[in-house]
Length: 74
Image 1 (cartoon, rainbow, N blue to C red):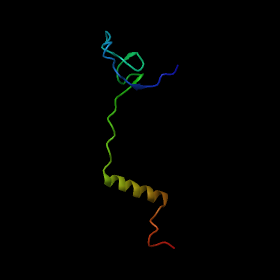
Image 2 (cartoon, rainbow, N blue to C red; image 1 turned 60 degrees about the horizontal axis):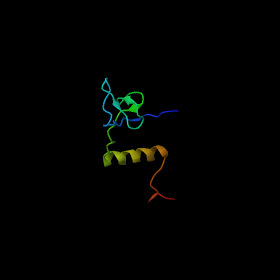
Image 3 (cartoon, rainbow, N blue to C red; image 1 turned 90 degrees about the vertical axis):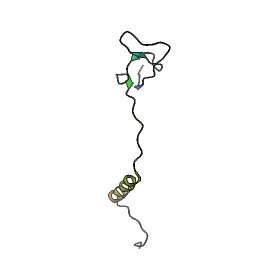
Image 4 (tube, rainbow, N blue to C red; image 1 turned 90 degrees about the horizontal axis):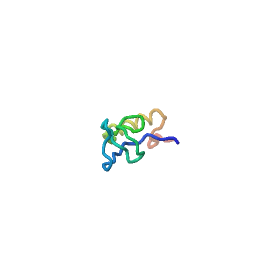
């Protein structure tokens, strides 16, 4: 059976082992966040400022050759 990495969800009913590791509710194995089975908890991504989003759109449009066909249309 292949086990995927997942966040460590400590089970408060079981407590910790002699090495201070918590038992995970998901896989029922002892471990710590960041070990081979359990991923590190990551901070949620921060939204980009509007100026950076607009600059990225302009850059992508320039790379792809897109342009506004308003006044200079055939």
